Image (cartoon, rainbow, N blue to C red; front, side):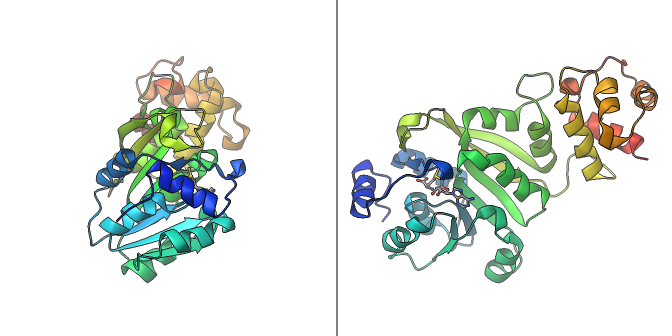
Length: 286
Ligand code: SAM
């Protein structure tokens, strides 16, 4: 039975090992069984599933995952947590602990070796300092992942799910929207963690699309346009993209294509939909 998550049990483990939290690793451990149950329920895990957990900490969520999944692979960067995990997870034969940086971890290999090439699920209470590189790395590399259920900073969850014309809309919203269907599952206050983070948190679930919702000939080129548009958020697309040296586009050419799309030359990236960025990329690509 999962025993961590109950605050006294977590505190007892931390004291037993005289564990010191490391700020640089974004360590905020969950101490609320209801939130843990909510995450695992949202992830829709069955006994067939292989789950990749990022940053197990002292193994709190890992215990819950191990009870629902066929197998859990938990990747933790902090080597001082490894003996603790070996202790707290000793009753679970279906857990493998890996002491590695998730940004260097080979998901493709995990899928081949542990799941006969079938996509795995990702579940995590993420370290907030690297949320975007982790999520973008998993989505962009086309790693074989069916869905991602993660705790992130509330503001980041809003950015992931935002639509055009809102203040949260940006390159992250478009990237997530291209690869996955996003749904915020729960808002989680700071008192559910030890130590308390100084921001609110949210659980978001990303279910990967089999085929992206828009057709684009060159994905990388579209994302280069998107990044350039939001680097100069306040500028019109004609000026923002025309000023981006790496793209080598003349303002006249951009204005012409925007006109052909039936849009005003003053249009800004912040009002452009994913579908419009895809059309723009398909037309502008040399
Ligand atoms: N899952 C635990 C829980 O919910 O209580 C801990 C979550 S804590 C927010 C984030 C965890 O990620 C920490 O254990 C931290 O050491 C680990 N971590 C930080 N950076 C990492 C990285 N690059 N690769 C793997 N794990 C990392």
